[in-house]
Image (cartoon, rainbow, N blue to C red; front, side, top):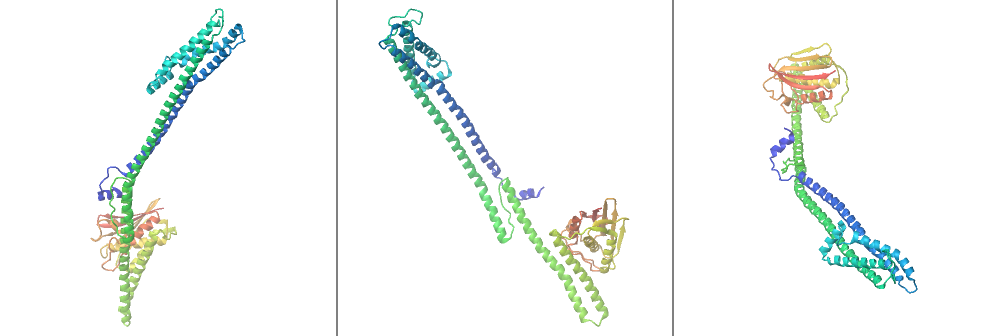
Length: 505
């Protein structure tokens, strides 16, 4: 189980119905839906307006233009009624105008007479007339068309356009007047159609405008409500986290952040809580480290001061003086190693350990370290078993410190006078160094605790006073990591504790 999952499970915070993530998703979705609706409505509105414009041009305005041309033809016929024109001239000049009028009446009856046309535009206009209560215009239009057709037909008979001889006179004033009356009435009816068409256009325009306003307002209201819901879900939780941060800065005390939900803010709250706990635990570790380090420094310093006073007080006693000097030498060596461990551990934590690789003979280095340790515990037996080629590439100073810490730790773990076995095994690609000793009962069940700085109490040999610093194995691990090596501690039958360092050639 992950650290976050454990923290979440430990917190046991209740879950809200709708998470912040879901509310944000709904907010984004509402914006997208609103934008999509506006785009669709705009497309539909443009198509509808374009259809209205085409309808007005094709079916409402076009008849007015044709009626205007028919009235021009009617004016030409009226001019022919003026005195001074012969009957033959009147009949001849009337025929082109009558041909245009006949074409107009046929076209109007076929395409534009709303009451009898089967065109979609005619049906649409009839529906609009019914909606506005103007169906009587259909009857007026039909009568005006009939009067116009009758007047044109009468003039065709008198002018001889039907194949008969022209009458005398070829044009009659009453026929021209009937034509004018029919065209004027037809023009008035079509002007009313234009007004009705504009009313329909305005109604559609209002509908489109209202739709846009409703969709926009709906989107704004939905976005506002969802935005408020998101703020209500986020603001109090963020405020609690900020207050926790402020309290941590002021007091330095870790307080678990109570948070509800199952979203990213919950993850952030738990992560922040874990960070606070890690910082607090790190502060406690630092305080413990300083306390243990002070204690570890105080012990050899107290011993040094005590035996120095003994040596000064008994200068004439050579036996006592030599014993005091031996203790002073051993404790100063122990103090120097402790200071060195403290210094290099601090550098390792900062990633500033000096690393100067070069060829290293592990067998020669092990013998050198064993000789130095024997000076502190002459009664302890050390057994070295090495392969034929124990050479690797590494930093000799760092590796010497690692070997010292491994051997001292093994010697302090082992019962008095038990041998410490150092083995060096090699292959074409790897070299494995092991330090083994039979352990005492004080060894913790979890051997990895020995690697943590000052997590396990330092061990001390009963007979020779040899003592590990509590930092040695932690420093060994950091030096191994710097060399790209693998460091581990394992328990073997015996019982024995074996520390292993495996290097790549």
